[in-house]
Image (cartoon, rainbow, N blue to C red):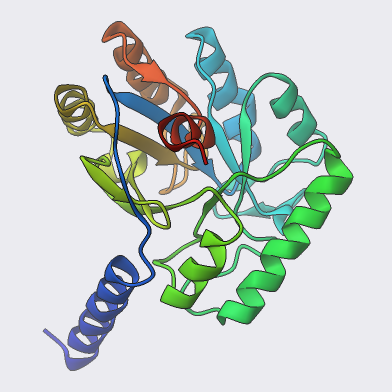
Length: 253
């Protein structure tokens, strides 16, 4: 293995360890039955056009993590949302969460700058949807710095990361675990395994992705694949709730 790759891996492990074990707010996963939440990072327009329609078809609602600085632009996950889609989502019962205004890298960005981007995102939400408030947060791109986790803890009921696992028995409210659908690479059995595990353990599984379209980016999935997941969850009679709703029901935050 080349030295630069070894260094990169060691740096990644160091960051992941600090982010995982520092600035924690551990709370129990107190559920009588499993809960699944569906989340969309960056809020691509396709997640609104196809993702929301699929969720609503099965009586479900999701969480859309918005970076207002991306509104109207096009990027790696395709065309992003328009401001008008935010109140439309809210009126249909979905949650809109914070993803920083600038879609900042959660580790490479200083905590002070990250905090300013959160404030800017909140102000923009107040302009676009005056009655709305961000209750949950998702860290863009990377594991978060411990200082950034601490800042988010003072602002949001909960913040979501990655981890490719359900939240079992206890969880860090400043770094909720999530399974990114696109990492299954279209293998439904991997998603099914996570859902079955959560149901058996009465756990909270957050299933996240980005775009939902027929030709998805490496960070998204097709509508058919997404619908197969939602259908399976509903066939198992698992409760589906947005992230903040599920967390608040468990902990009243």
